[in-house]
Amino acid sequence: MLAIELPTAGMTSIAPGDSPLRELLESASAPGLQVTHDARSPLPLGATQVTWTAWSGTPGSSSQALVTRQAWIYVFPFGQTPAGVSGRHDATAGNHSAKVVRDRWGRVHVTWLDAARPGRGSTILYRSGVHDPASGRFVWDIPVSRITDPSSAVGMVSLEASANALHFAWTTERTTRYLRVLNVGGQWRPDPVRDTGAWGGAYDNGSDLAVRGDDEIHVLTYTGQYAVSTNGGARWRVEQTPWPSAETKNPALAVDAMGGTHVVYVQKVRIPKEWKSGQPNGAYWQLRYVRRQAQGGWVDAQDVLGAFPEWRDQGMSRDVLADWPDILADRQGNLHLGFHGTANTGKYGQDEAFYVRRPVTGAGAWGAWEHPLPLHPVDRATRQSHSYAPSLATDAESDTVLAVVFFDYLDQSHETYDSDALLLRGGRLVGGPIALSRNARAAIDAKRGDDALATWFAIAAPRLYRQADGRVWLDVLYTAQTPERHGSPHYVIYQRREVTDSLK
Image (cartoon, rainbow, N blue to C red):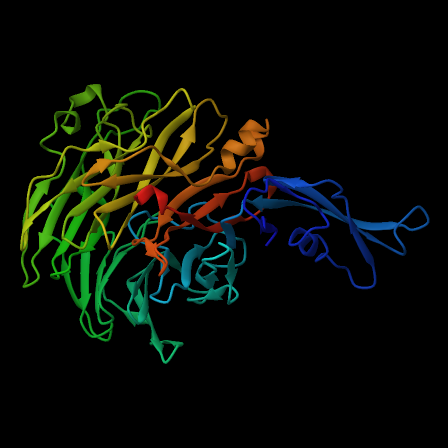
């Protein structure tokens, strides 16, 4: 990887002779030749092009430069650690399922899709590491590992953690596969990979995954196939979610403490024959909900946003679209739903992130959906534009929810995304945005917008992590998209953000 994390908080650049940049620059080699580089001044945050030269003898005027190579080096701020690479700019999609979790010992686990790199096939990758709570530093403790063979055709991956296990689910051309890795005596031991028998995937989204303990696993596929195992994945029961006949997409799944299953999905009520940018297309998509009781049977089917006029069908004058939902149930049973949509803009592709809560009213009973809240509206003062695909995290000790979104900037020649977290308590926004990645903003401010790294699918761990000393952390995994002209793979970045003060 030609990417590093700055070693200390507050740093904005690093000298070529300082670690870890020194080791990266000196890693270039050519058998029997001496190699130099042209990095002479500190490298700032973001992208810098470096040239390496291999010499026939001692570098200098009497020696011949036999070959040169150029590549881009990417510098990330402290707290954002490169995990690996992918040919996909959306390697951490979709927002409905976790790609990073902590186990009960505090160890960090991440997973992503590596695909679209010539000759490398597609594979699910995994890595784990340790976060030092005192210094805030993070160290990977294993190299990048393959969950699947590169010769297999796989899609997006989901990850969860229970008391003594890690759970992975990913799509293939024909089914969804599942892997459980158990912690036995402090050692992680994988079970055999299982076939859930549930079919359905999409290029940019995969199956959702929820667990209740080490042995009860719930999987929901893109086509609404719902699979459950109560014996650690050895056997599965599959049924079809009762969807209407209209075209559907992007389902998401949550399981409450009583074993009830909550499903949301997008129903494409009206689709134009041709999408036209910059103007309404008359499209209408609903955000639908249905619940499966723990004892069986699907009930409570409804339009989540049907009670709110701005989300109803506006005919051909506006696009009213709701898409990319994520749903979680908190410890009390309240339902939290994030999505993005066009109620404010009326145009396809010009979305804003929203949040809506459904409060629990009793055992197995819920009230009406509360009014949707805009999470990250377009802000012309800061030049922050549309926002997308909120990913939710709950807190085990409070009614706090954090919603992570990625957003664009106005007046840029290409997509330049950064990310924020928004804090909600009791279904209401508290305070302003919590800044996460600012890779794009740093490049824009330096008049280098064409070299900006774009943050795609910033996915939160489903639960905030609380240390024994009371400090609280939000964990996020995102894909840093490199500009096409760099010829570089995209980087998968693990970010940890302390939110202790925000929760007070």
